[in-house]
Length: 109
Image 1: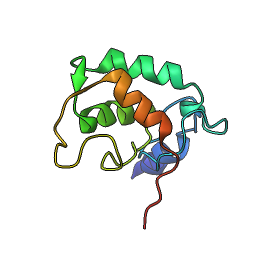
Image 2: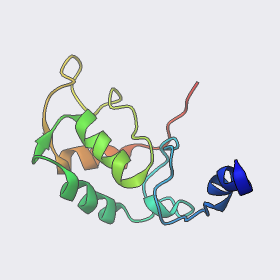
Image 3: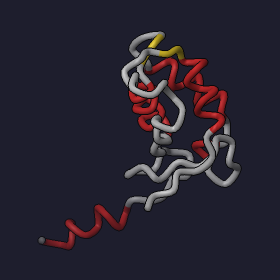
């Protein structure tokens, strides 16, 4: 590459802690001080609601909006977000958000 232009693009990107990380990192509890994008749970709730295509969505859909807003992987919804065998059940934002607030940390094995 003439003039080194190819390597400069990656090296010139600076870290901005107020922007969602890309790629997403594993979920940690909402309100965690050290993670700027998770610091304000009510702001996240509002931003997810603004992006949502409907008032009632599946847990997977709410989680996708959460990740798009924060850059953080949402917790596994099979851990209590929906009744067993009813993954596609639509729930309201408030119900989903209460479930989200109760989640602690995602541990990948």
